[in-house]
Structures are given as C-alpha cells and as structure tokens.
View (spheres, rainbow, N blue to C red):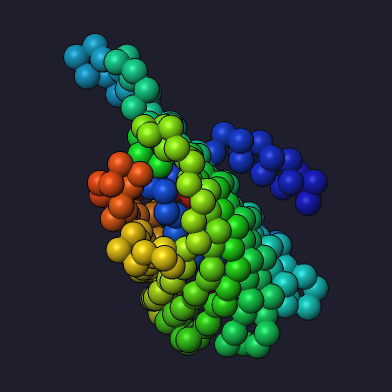
Length: 253
C-alpha cells in the first residue's frame, strides 16, 4: 500500500501556483492521529475560440507524514500550472515546498521550511528561500480552528527583466481561521500573509486567500479558491498584483 502511494506521489509531483507567495495553511492536513495522508488536485481545460485553441493544466499534490509519537510532522507540497494557446505560452509556473514541525505543546510548535518557485509572468521570475519560526494554535474547537505564525526567511530572488539577483532577509506573519460545519459537509478557510523586509518595511508582500471545500465522500471533494497577491516593490521599483478564482476537485488517500 505504502509503495503504491509513494509511486503515485512521484508520478504526480513532476507534472504538478500562480503568485510568488503561496498559502501553505490550506495544504496542511489537520489531523490528530493520522500518520500518512496524500491529497491531490487536478484540472485540465481545452477550449476552441473561433479556431484558436487554449489548453490549461493545473495539478497539485500534498503529502504529510507524522512520527509515531505525533510530535514531528513532515509536509511536502508540489504545484504546476501551464496555459498554452496557438498564440504562444500564456502561463508557466511551478512550486515546491518542504516543511518540518515539532510540537512543543498543544499550543506551540517550532517549524522550519525550504521552498523554490518559478513564475514566467511576474517580474520576480524565480524565488528560493529557507526559514524557521513559531506557530501558535490559538483556537482549537470542534468546528473552529485558528493559527498564527511568525518566521524569519532568507530568500534569493531572480528577475529576468532586470537580469539581477537579490538576497533578502524577510519576516513572514500569517493568520488563518477555519470553520467546518456541524454536519461536516463544507469547510471555509481564510488566510492572510504579510511579509515585509526587515531593512525596508515599505517593501512587503501580501496574500489573502479564501477557500471553500465541499466533500462529496471521504476521498473526493470539490473546491473554490480566491487568491489576491500584492507585491509593493519589484526589482523595477513598481508594484504588481495578481488575483485568481479557481474551481476544481481533489482526492485524498
């Protein structure tokens, strides 16, 4: 069983973002006892507009492993987004993230992470980072959960527009609130990220994400996600933003 799941994950991940700030909160599997979970989301769209064809592929895989004592958690996330038309490539982006959590108590956790991502359409085309910090479980009720985190990040950013590479020390603060209905037939999650530079607070990034999950069975669900991303200062000394509304389906094993 584990061998089949592992092979499935290896096949999905390479074929797996859009903004250069990604919400990891909705990728976590909130479970107190399950030691291994695999989630996967898939999407493919083909359209023909007066003879001009457009193809879109979106895929994501998340796997979570926990130690026997449940104090250590390993999270791995991979995403891929590709849009192509007869007029050329419209979107090409990927994202890989690995994270380790260690529970100090039911309230407090230590976490460390490493991340790499690429987006052909943004000024900052590639970003790699490593970081560590604290995570607080400030609400843990039957239908409500809330998390607050603060981390230090060291990042490398490459801009193809300017041909420059920058190295930054950045703070990352996130706030997440989730509600699951009493009948457990839907879940709503809202997450907010704020990431300023330590040496220049006017240089910051924001991500706001609203997600609605509607499970149709224990292993199959449909979802709707709205993302808004804002970067206050790019290497061109401009600001940029992206917004995205996505609907799709996913499976859990």
